[in-house]
Length: 202
Image (cartoon, rainbow, N blue to C red; front, side, top):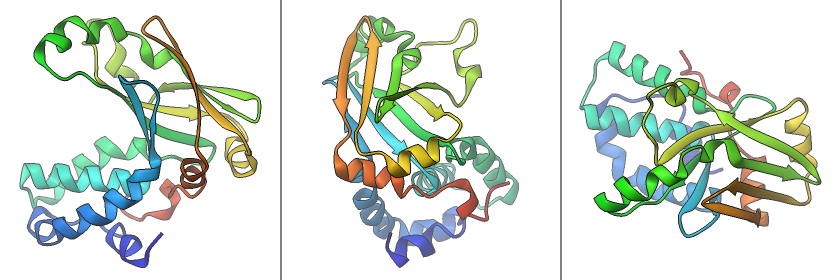
């Protein structure tokens, strides 16, 4: 990771400061994120999250709220920080791609429960994903196009570090697929910046 990026994520900036560097941030984050995306099908993809990608979400939310208020910024941090992986965790966002209102109404509901069918297999060991925010899936909850999930398992960090072959599988009525994780994506997962590497956790 570049020293510029490390310097950027060392603190959470108020909107008035972040706006001054936002264009430069976009260039750095886009390059950082590129190998962390994995296409599963024409309708499904995932982004492997870490402290860098979550920092970006936090700053973009602060920017959209146009706030310099310390308490509001802390609340935004509290909202997103569970997405940062801890030891023995891999965090990711699963995207269901829908492109218009009709697909939102007719297609997206068919992907209900997709969050329960995404596994990672590392050198033959299978790990199931679980929601980072279980309350998103309670009674009466709406079908989502973005799912914030984690792989959690004892010894996962060591397994990832040694892994030679990793695949992601989806088992759902709308998608049954196994996708090999490319070497550059696996390398980016291995180099993920965890919660212990940043000081702005609240």
